[in-house]
Length: 585
Image (cartoon, rainbow, N blue to C red):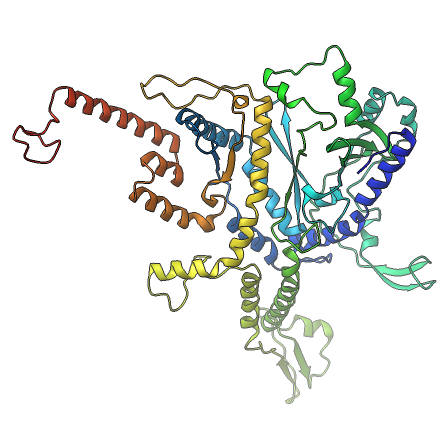
């Protein structure tokens, strides 16, 4: 995009881009609210249901797609690097995985997967905390994000996108004052409850009987069925003055980089990253806080990294020419409604079988109170008419209603691409462990496809976290000992300049690939393509670091013992030349 230099035209252009990015926000928010109701309560209505299958099922699906406890990154040096450089990258890989896990980023990514299954997608925003001196990751709900072209499916190809949220009114006033726009404070649009419906709760449950016009714009007449049972809403209680805040990121064709504008409602531009960076560079006290930050501050308009933005799109199910993708919950909502209907029918029939309706005939003077009391424990009735009788009407349970209900659970499994073997359930026709494994591998194709699609956003999160550590982390990394046994030279993240390769080690983010990874590690070790330490790294067992340390200690001790035997001449061949090399006399 070409951003105008004239302040008036630039403000008009920024507002237009912002309106385009937020064009679908209201429509999508209505869909997200409905999906959220089904996820939390199993229904979009106000009444409670007997059992919510969607919540437990989505938890099951997400557990197959991603597991945070075994996920780890593989960090490789450039091809044909020297041995010393490769050892540094191996030590850096261990340090980075520990830092990434300690920062809770693996868990944040797992939470984002649940949200993407419910809503359709989730956005993660990477950053750095100077307080904790660590990488941060903030989840962004999809209704808080907007893109310029929804027909473009990749975030990196978007010409503009915006992150919208609310900040405190006094915070907005401070930002305006720092920007020299104190006269704009009186124009701020203030809200108090941005997360709640603008209508009272009872109005949202009103059953409309008639209107005074052709549509709802006229006077509405109806009735409300009030509910007096408290129901958790899982919404933050907000009652303080807030202001809508927008971080608008635009690709500037003149700078060939991203440019960020900070805007508060109603359309007041607080800052422009290009002008802010230029002003900082022109100031006398401008200098990076750390030595390794110098290489990252050579930018004209991007406050993050050159040609990078801090957002990561998590979207397990794609749809052609639609940025937000497909919400997996939409395939489960009709099944949940069907399940609700069947459970209510079964519950109603069982209730009427336990407490059947009764018909009394031929009684003389049997009042309603006596008829209501009759049927309880130790109740009796007496009448002189011989034809008097009470008949209980027991409803019959349809023979296939339970089978029909159980088939709904099978459709839940089929809709998510799962099988009984994957869930650990037995199935008929399985003759051996290898046969069950083959069935598991054959039947997991659909769910594996979704799991593999999550590798790209996870790698991007790892790549941004690595770059943030390069720019901000001043904790030294200790490499493996040298060949002579002396400690390796310490280095920083920033010292690892040049190209590197980052991947998810052996698809370790998903339990679906765990058996394949173990078999591959065993085959590589058997063929001597990897040593014992490489086997430990691939298997990633509990307490792996201590196991590697103990292995190195044993190897060092064995090498010293072998050198001592060789110095004493104990490993020399027999004098007559007979026997294999290394045989003792």
